[in-house]
Length: 149
Image (tube, rainbow, N blue to C red; front, side, top):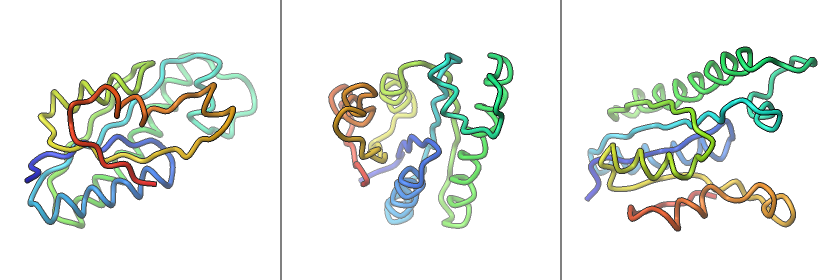
C-alpha cells in the first residue's frame, strides 16, 4: 500500500513521535521513509528556531551554521531510529521560508504515497499569528496525510 513515506520533522517531541509512527508504518509495509527538515532563512523571527544558549544577537552566518547543525542532528536522530527499525531512510534538508510549500513539493519529488507529520497543537492567538503548517499541507497536498498529535 505504501512504498515511500515523507516525514517532515522539526525539533519538537511531537515531531519525533510522528517519525516513530512513520517508521512503524514503513516497517509493516516494507516501505522507505524520507525525513525532511525545513530551515527558515535568517530573520529576527527565525532565530528562536535554533534555541541556542547564545545571549547576544546572532549574525545571519552564525544562524545558518547553528540552524543547519541542529537540523542535521534532528535528521540523524530519525535516521538512527530507521536503522534500528531496519527501514531505509533518506534525509533532506531544505532552506525556505514556506515550510508547507516545501513539504508538498518534496512529497511530489520523493514520490511519497503518504506524509506523516506532527501537529504543533497551537491554539488561540498563537495559531492566528503563526499559522499551522499542518493545516496548509492538508489544504495543498494531493497526498494522503497522517497527522500525529
